[in-house]
Image 1: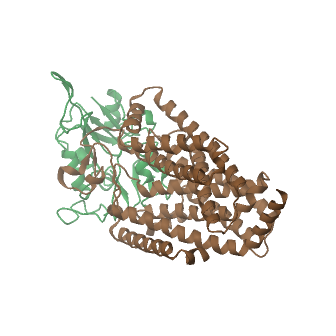
Image 2 (image 1 turned 90 degrees about the vertical axis):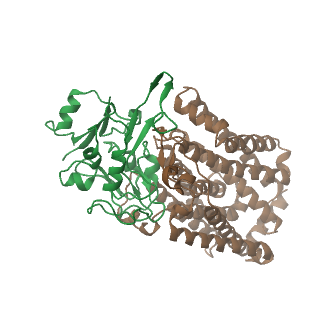
Image 3 (image 1 turned 30 degrees about the vertical axis):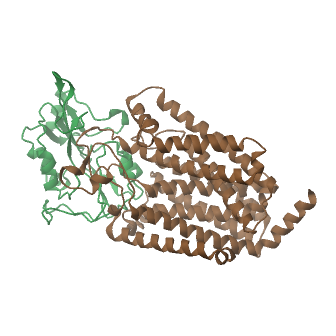
Length: 403
Length: 205
């Protein structure tokens, strides 16, 4: 709790935002999803974007921690604890956003009484629950009185494949839908794994540097530089996959492909696409590709923040571009087919192209959830690290001796 | 087992929207939603035309759930709320729908609409067939091929009300049915064939 008590203003602000978010959610429960900007044309919005983002953000932690034991990368071990805490909190946030997005959340038990095993959404529920359980077990084996490195080693052998699977299944929710030009692609799962790796690592770096600033952990230049090097590799892989996908859509010059890329390059989702390409991929890669820059905390932080924002933008263009143009084009279009149309009457309910603007309620809910998650993360990490501080300081001491 | 289907004559369709309103009345469809729409093909405005003057064409496409043999919406539903019934119709069990809208993302025809808020009707009562269930907020809904009417052996409301008799309805599995004989004579097509959904609603000109 040390971190929360030390930064009273920040803690207070986060509490207020979390409560505001809760109120906004209660308002949404009463009024239905009609209080959001979602509509019959763009039937998923900010919540699903955040779900995709946070599933990805949870990757970095668990992958770094479990690589430490699976691939015997000893230096990663000393950040394993804050990494797994980050991963646990992020996956809870992702699950929460799916629940918040449900229109009939009070009928959720139907998933357990009559599951349809063909549904990628059901796979996602299963794999997220598995992932969460593994995260919690991992934390337990690292922190409990009976902490056992052997058990950690066993669990990390399961953690790594499940981590890959959780991103793939999330990708398949979109990638298996033949109806959506921009989603239906075999490379969707690799893209999701790659963006999970880079955004997850970036968030991990940000949180580790912050914890070091708060004197909770000792990160060290070397470890930061090697994590940053891994981040640069992941950015390159992510960019490569996105390039493959775009070339494959563009090359046959089909009408649907041209329409989709038109929206991405110069249409409604273009700002997000170009931000991701420039600020989310090119700039951070050019910074981190030089070994000298990876030693400089400021530059690594800047690149990490850009990567997280870039991946957020990627989620946005990926999700929304495919909602813009219905396959069956023609006036009057879809009833309540855009955010404006959904709250209109008469002839204005029709829309020939999908559009979406989140409402203040949605934004408040999202801010609230993120604030709550930050509070939980700070509380957990300071509590668990306090408990394990002895171990960390001995590890640091032995490293200092070695060098 | 039966496989109910429909054939729509685009040459006969005059874009009067009677089927749109008949559907809305029969099924008590709330404000802001339609189970059945009539699109003016390739146009930004309703009743528009394609081409350059004087070489203009206009085609109306009545569009609702295609009751696919291979429905994309059915596969993705996590609770099995969407199902294929014994008459070959794609139906929704509203009690099972959790409102995840996976089906809306999966349907290539945008046939589904969602009860984003508590449904509003104007006039303020359930103007539909007495047997049609009312849907709560937070569930998806769409054309049921007038389940309540076709269960009683009647034609769907859009078929009955079409003033130009552009719609033919019947059992595709019964070789003696009017629609089977009709499809035997005509060359028909389905919408978005490349999506592989195999619609039971056919179109012809």
